[in-house]
Image 1: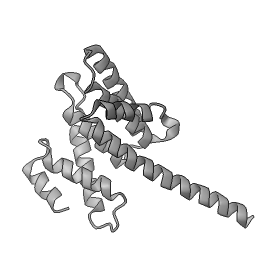
Image 2: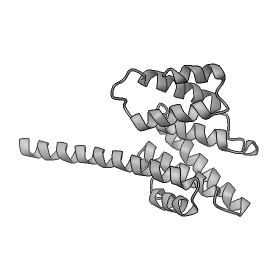
Image 3: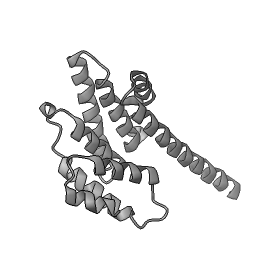
Image 4: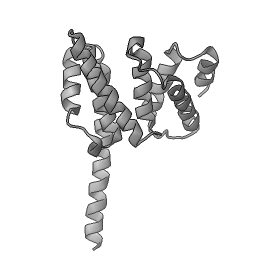
Length: 174
């Protein structure tokens, strides 16, 4: 009985490590996808089979991969199709885990960079407030729950035109 429990715990722990590694890899692909069509296609192909069964965070990466494809397509209709699929999947992921900072950061980044004519900008202020609260909650946590996410959110908000000088001064202190 103890041996079976040990095996189950070992499998669960190795599964958590695999997911953490996948997140790190996916973040790297996401960053590269912004400037490289080849990376964008790889990111898209690596995430295209993710669904709600994969978990909200992985579904969020799928959504961002779909949105990133828009940057590397020429046909406006294809761009809009990928964008709308990505938007739908991102909103679905957030509905599953509304307090997930990774997903809220993905949506914030997407909305502040999406053209206004797409109308995908209604959560900018709520996501910004959520992300600032996330940074505040993690400030004194050592080690941080996710150091890379914390650093990415902080850096992005400090460079973002949607953050006021007051907000940026607060973020600098976090």
